[in-house]
Amino acid sequence: MSITLKLCSENLILQFQAQLINQKNRKRVIIKQSRADIAQLLQMDKLENAFARVDQLYKDTCVLAAYSLINNFCECIITNMSHINKCSSIHNLPTNVVVAIASVTYAASRCGELSLLHRTRNLLRERYGREFDIINVELFAGNYVDLELRKNLSFCSVPENEKLLLLNEIAQEHFNTQL
Image: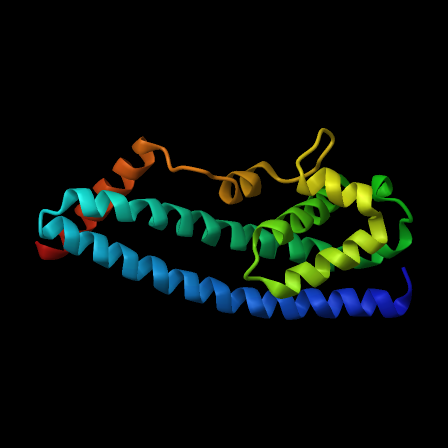
């Protein structure tokens, strides 16, 4: 990796982390408002409507958790940048660094709202090849994507028990604030 590419990728990751802070704050506000809206629906005895809203709240909560993981992976990459520059092959890097690179690549394919992450993915693809990119994005055998990140970014439907737990939690919070 050339010095220019190294500085470019490190600067890009730092810019991305600033973008990520904004997205995390935005998502926190959305979650807070959703919880308040659901509590209001529960108070008005509109359980069916509240239950329907919990689906999006669950997904937003998972995405917020994924943002924190992505930030940790970026920190790992920045911290290990000198080691990354010395190794010509992804297979010569420590496992935690490979997991961080693979997870950032995967997240870029799932988080369209994080434009700078896509540019980071392109630099990583340039460095480690299209095959490494595809294996991790498509979750093919041999991928290194973090399991928790996978869980937070790969959901089709929210399990009913998770919805009920969230509704119960919101109801308890709301009830406790009125005591």
